[in-house]
Length: 76
Image (cartoon, rainbow, N blue to C red; front, side, top):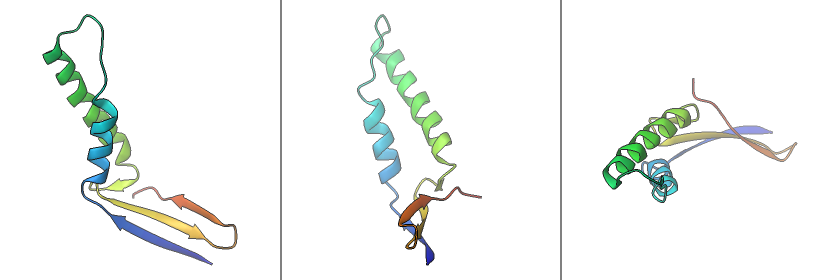
């Protein structure tokens, strides 16, 4: 049997992305420039994640009980 599950968590994606980029540092670059870089990187990652996350908060997976798999579905 296959079925789809849509999960919603409005803060999970942005919180995870922000956490991932918060410790980025680049030698020889001023702190304010690093912050600009981090903001740009966050937007880039959000854009990539839009392939799977609708509006940045809905994620749909398909569970296959016969194959015992769970696959993240791409947004249309």
